[in-house]
Length: 193
Length: 153
Image (cartoon, rainbow over all chains, first blue to last red; front, side, top):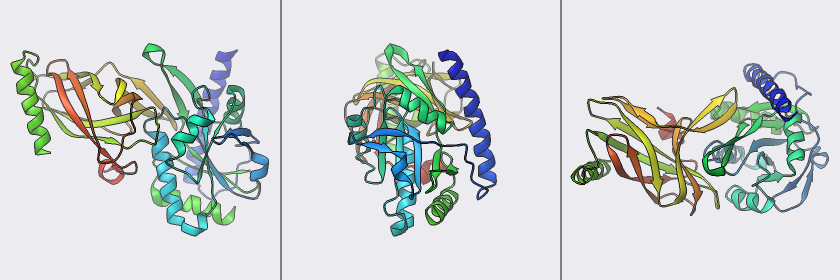
């Protein structure tokens, strides 16, 4: 059963990747309602973040984990740089960092880790089932990969999802996408919601 | 840079004197690391491995003072999915250079004992099949750093 779920996710990951490719080249195309969905997770301060209360404000969402040496911190730094470039326009804009490693990423761990990126980054974690449901809704892929000595790492989708004020999917920013292009996408999201 | 090279050379000579190095002709160029968020459990080190010798060599393992465990990993992006795997070794063909860099091979610092801050130096040892153990000092750059300098390759 678990294996089947993994295969399904692998398939959706490929679908998302293909779709992301399409979005990438037809940036500004019609919104795709099939990506994203309601979620209710715990923030790094232990508060519950309900996607329902995010309505009215566009936001960005990223799946990552704290035992991530490169993609996760780099993406957070890149997003901070983009938001800084947008200046006052981006005031109050939030980037949600959803942990795909809830076993290790408790709210306290996320709080420490994200202190370097606050205040615009909100860490979210939950039970493994809650995380699985959110990832599925966003068609994000993640998988635990064992390392020697009982350690493990996570494979995970590395997109930044741009979500509109109605909670609907607008666009993605790919890992290390050209800053100009990423900025344009973010600007469009913030301006048009 | 020159200092690093000389240090590496000195290390090689020392290692040679100690009988550790054999036919190794590896130079470590521009070892660097990236600052980590506070309490980050992991970090990464990058360096260009230059093989000036006539035989291939292989980076087989690494250690560092700042980490409880160090592995050589390879990162790949596969259809937008980031994957990271330990590698059995990084082969450096004779007369060639292999760059450990973001998006590819990296020295993975696990069980990080301290936050890596820009300006710090991370000491470690890289062990090669032929060249033996070579000390290395990774210069820690800002978290956003390395973007322009290292992406240009």
